Image (cartoon, rainbow, N blue to C red; front, top):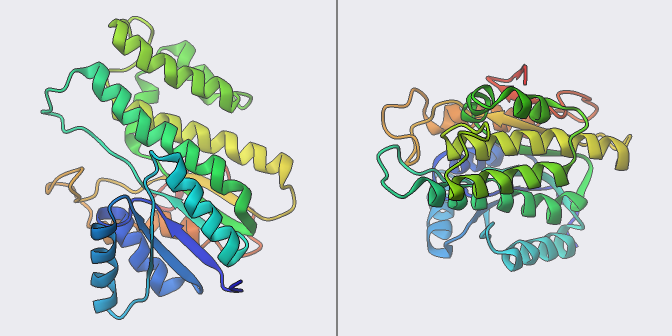
Length: 276
């Protein structure tokens, strides 16, 4: 078993995930795994970073496939006895001009961005070592989706007592409400990506609370963050930040120094805690 520290970044063959791997290879003392659903794309991304003189490693990971998550979990457990840094970056978004019916967009977007991210956490959070760092890449779209929810939903999503089960039921309800064509009447915004990322931020707040109970005193810090508006395939060429600039806040949270006790359970943008 390797005594090295280990970091894993999901959805890392391009965009912000790729830039996060690049930065961790430079700043993290340990092995850094670039993961991707497609082995060819993932290995090509690793080769690109190797050309820059960096040494990332590759492991296949499709976050929508539980067996794929569990294969990564078993590999990390066997080779490293756990995990030091987890960056949940993998996500999808439909383009604004996409004509796919809204209920399908809602189902597909939440399946990856919320439910699959939650599955990764369920399998990998128990592996996080003392002083470990977990970063869930969310979005300012989640914060604006929250502001567009009904007062009742806003109160629930801001609650310090909402449980993971309650959150999951609400995310399922959003998808069901879009299928019935009643999501607006039920207090939801017209923004599937925003709701999926709202879910990620609330999930992060819940997970941090649970870590306080179950792993108290182990120094684990878990946060959600917004990388900003970044020039990627997802956001398009007009965005204001380069991928390397978009990686700054996630990397800052991934490398919070040992002994730090904050931020934890927060939503962070531009390296600053934002009010939720």
